[in-house]
Image 1 (cartoon, rainbow over the protein chains, first blue to last red):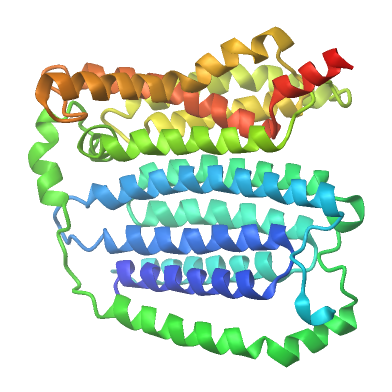
Image 2 (tube, chains in turn blue, red):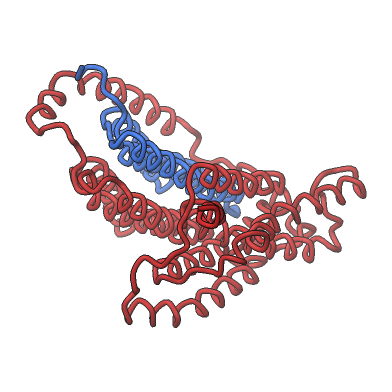
Length: 102
Length: 321
């Protein structure tokens, strides 16, 4: 398997791991971590597939998109963490309520 | 591809997957964040293997460094009983939870992933993408690093919106929380000295990255991230800016980047009839001006995000009471 496809598959795997953790974990900090891992997976697929140019120069457009994405991801993470802290300060826990426990 | 690089890539891929899995599954949240930072650093290595050094710089500074710092700061502010226990649910209940319903999302995601993997593998092995168009127009873009040319010229629109997103996130954080400007604890001599020694170096590295971005890996985002990291280090070492700087001066610095972008966008719209379409002779200068303004704003915004609240709000409340 060539390098671009190997890394693209790793990216797919990271996306799947993140999505699974996002669904099964109740703690909000864990969900934010999971979203970041999902994002990393998407970025990895984009950049890996940009390497398929053979001997021609690399495709710089996905690279620029991923740099933009990384900065947007960190600002979204900061906002999400603040929301989590606010919820924690108001309700005393940092998890989403679980209906089945009632 | 030689056998050695294949083995290296496979090992790196497996390590990434394993670190991500451990970061998401290990019960201690503190450990999870440390694993996530390690994951970010290995991601930076993977970007280098994928010949994307610009992305590697951004990932190492932002993805691993700043995100990790933000997560740690948030964990420390969480309710102390929760800081080291992920689940408040008793462990035995947790186990029944695993067996009763977790197979359902697991199966669904396995199916989705198989589909995604199939789609990825069925793509053609060679695709030029937009590389020929970028290469053809690189000479008139004002930058010889293709990534900088795309970010600041060909798709300057994206970067304008991105800087606004960063500002919006900060406004969201500020509207939710206020930050105290009081020193919490004395930093200790090691951290204090380290911060004093490293801050000038951080500023120098940021300026270098900004300048070199025109023709080599680097640019406004990486430089801004390094500036932001310097801010985080200073805040951790207990340094707090004077309250007078928190009102108007801070806000002016925060909007420098977006404002410069908007002014250039309007000027180019009036002159050329197309937003952010620079005249080729002035493109280099315009890109440098935009990048400098963006670097300062990004750096200060990231440090302010780490502070985690509106520093003025707190002051005003204190004055009233």
